Amino acid sequence: MINDSGILYIEPSARVSLHPIVDQLTRKMTAAFRRSIPGPGYRGFHVCSCGVFSSNCDYKLPNDQITNSLCIHYLAFHREEIPETELKKAGRLDYGEEEPTAEELKAPRR
Image (tube, rainbow, N blue to C red; front, side):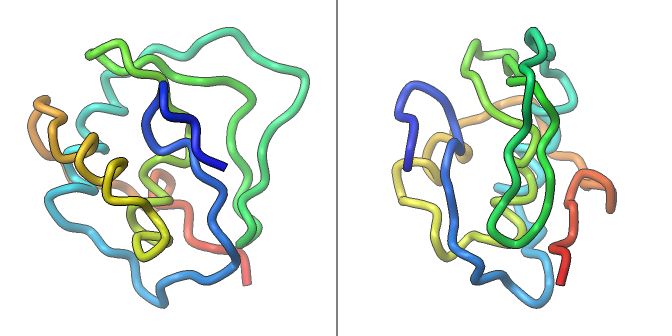
């Protein structure tokens, strides 16, 4: 499922990259996400098909797009499944580039 009103609201399969893809898109998303504002918490959370847990809230990026706490993880470990439209949204983020931490990458639970 993809939510077109936000960015990187996807539900990837259990296929994951063995190594994270940390490139310009991942760094742009990291920079934008670090400037995001968490929304109100929900009563639950999402679990990625690879076993990684999200937080219990959405995040508002500086450009007012809404995303989730797994946005960096999706770009790094599920890139092959991200639709081109979502990759283009990430490419248009204009808040610099920053290296993601291990916590932000959220390596798959195997």
